[in-house]
Image (cartoon, rainbow, N blue to C red; front, side, top):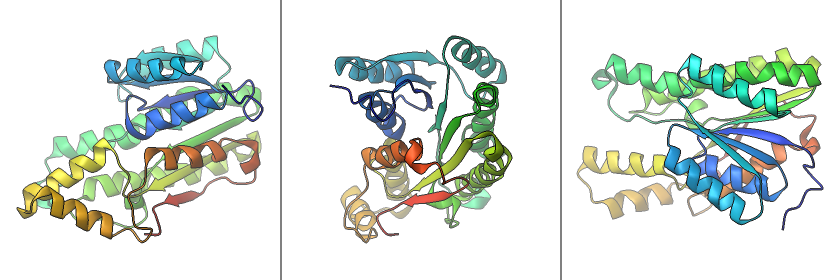
Length: 258
């Protein structure tokens, strides 16, 4: 059963909703009564997310497109904002790349920035006019602790997330007079496909077995466990609610005390 009292009439676009944090945000907000518009480059993942939402009685529309492609973003987001009153945007799409700095190729560097920063720019730019027209909006960017503290072997990723945090703060100041809040969540050590890629990369680089690498990873979290996508989704729900109307331009950690 949906709880519509908190988000009655709200509509959210969620990028990267084919799995992980994006999917968890879509499921959480749909359960709370938000009309969900999901996008990802992974159409199969989107269909799975949509099926999960609709099985619980939620409303979900999907479009598969590349957020790094300006024409695809313009066409797809334009279709949604012309059909729905979009008041919420959650930028979840992201990729990680682990290697020593000298081994990063230009194409790898550009790919990380294209998804983690340029894609956010393109999607957000396409959505904001609708929010300005209605003098209301909530934008949440899923960043990373790597955007607050630089990480070795993750230079491209850290740099892109530092950039995303800068975008968040600057855009929040620009949009504050228009009743639009912009915040970022900086997760760390979250159970996700991205975390699995990090662990596998460390297995390859250190020669240790997976169990040992994972145990060290978990032990590094003061709270004693890895976070879940649902942990991030719950914080996201708060940041798009009117209960957080005085919070903007912030980078909020969801890191188990790290």
